[in-house]
Each structure stands twice: as C-alpha cells, then as structure tokens.
Image (tube, rainbow, N blue to C red):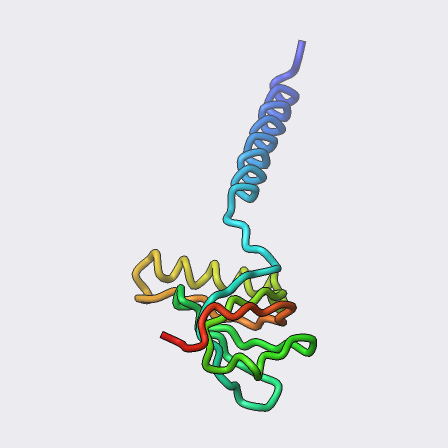
Length: 129
C-alpha cells in the first residue's frame, strides 16, 4: 500500500506528464514556415548592385540576392523567385510575433518581410501590375 507522500508524488508525475504531452502537441501544431520559399511579385532594384527587392503579391517584402541567378535581367518584371530564407528560425519567431500583434489589434498589418537568397527565378510577366 502506498503512503500519502508516495501517492502525491505519483499524482504529480502524472500531472507533469500530461502537461508536457499537451505542450509537445501544441508545438507540433504550430504553423510551419518553410526555409525554402516561392514568392511571386514585382522585382525592383535594391540599395546596391547585388541587392534587389521583391514585393510579393501577398503583401510581403523580400530583400533578395542571388549570385547564380540573373536577377538584374528581371527588374521591372513579375517573377516567381524560389530561394532560401536567411536565418529561418529568427525569421519565423519575428513573423509569429507580428501575427500575435495583429491578432491582438496592436497592428493593422502583418505583412511578411525578410531576406531571401534566390536559387531560381521564373518570369511570370514582363511588367509589374
């Protein structure tokens, strides 16, 4: 037969396991943001010769670079750029904080902003609309 102290310890262990299980499940259900993205929008010149800005059709803004892709040839075009998000973990945390601020009414917009190293670009249109 268990003593009162042992009984409480077992109950506390069960509670802890239940809390950890709930926490682990909620983490698994969080929205997953990919490290590799496809962004479609208007490509513009950036601050220097190797930087460009991609204004996504979804309201996002990306500072883009691509040493293996001829981005300069597509300035003023609507393109779909495939690339790798710089510092994806920090980017995701920043975007989650912006989503929370929007959800709580602190901001009106939660348009995504980030840095993307482009690995592939496809022209959608020869103009930006």
